[in-house]
Image (cartoon, rainbow, N blue to C red; front, side, top):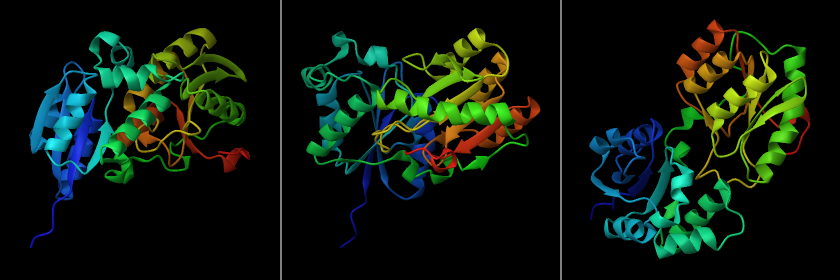
Length: 279
């Protein structure tokens, strides 16, 4: 009797991440069942799917039924989804309304964690996408030719605790500062828009920091950045980016580092031990 093939259910959002995850899953010989959402999903994922269905955002009951009917064992969430549209009650079925609006805390980590728990109740384990793409994790240390100068190192040290507190409150993962003064804190707008606003307020030489939120579930929501982030920094004349090593996803790494080197931007994978802070 042949061994049963693992079936992965991929909740596919936008950009390149769901494509990369799909390729990683198929490379291991697993069956791939993909759920996409109108206006959110990168449809280039479709050729990688053994089974594909487009659903309306917020219809959790139909999503669970679709995965269960196709024998999904494990679930992966990958790619960007527009949160304000997710929170629009007009798009939600009763199960989604109960999940979202029964909670006092409606931050990203809280809602994604609650969603993961719902899948667990249905007998499907939510697994981290980086399990299939370990090379995406950001390594520790200075990753560019230029190291941070003394002022940038001090801003990195100062911002670590601030960013962790911001994450503990489940507000965002990123902040921008210059000489110890915070010029922007991430909320719904995302990292690149936060960088733009922070640089407009503080001027050239800003430091950008992005960390893993305390209590964040690694299987559903790791911090991520890539070439677009570095381009946003260059546009705003920011000079240094610190991201939490081993807990952040670094897309387009080679291109991003080449671009950073060209524009004199330093990229550093930072750790709690480096600044004698707790995680």
